[in-house]
Length: 194
Image (cartoon, rainbow, N blue to C red; front, top):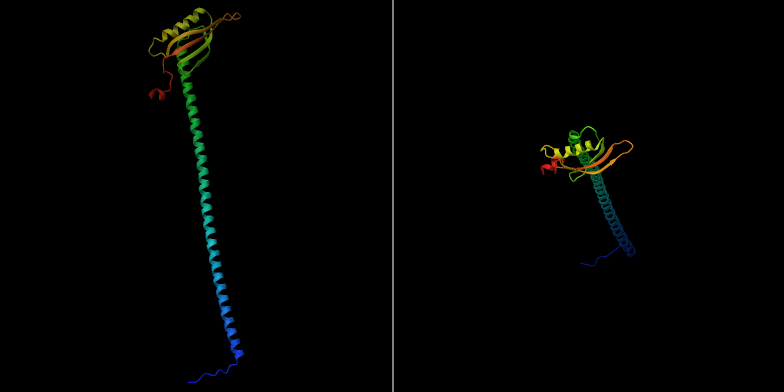
């Protein structure tokens, strides 16, 4: 065999090599560009997908926050109602105490005594103030309270006169009386059951 003879001029062979190199460069560049484009597209889609997920999470958090706010509002209303009910219960219990006290007191008040003031404190003691037409009427009232204490159905346990004075202009006697109550008789039923 012999050597091969190349009939193509050498300048053409070089040009052919350059064209081949240029084709490889263009194909490589196009491949790299396509790869970059696909990578960018994948990154964009991933970022968009993540953004959508973040927006969904934000919407869910907003719904939860709204629910929490509604729950807090409901709890605040419930707390307010509980406080109101407790206040009404205290007021009602206090009025029942006063009502029982005044009712029992009026059963023993003799004619000629006017009650102007009656307050009950928390230590089973009441202060009763008023006027009497005479010292005898006042003595009858004091005796009625003391005698009523001996009755088992009575709420009174004793009484003591704390102040007496004569109004010169009217001739009436003003008085203040400390009335001691039997322990626990005016407490609300709930407290007595404990």
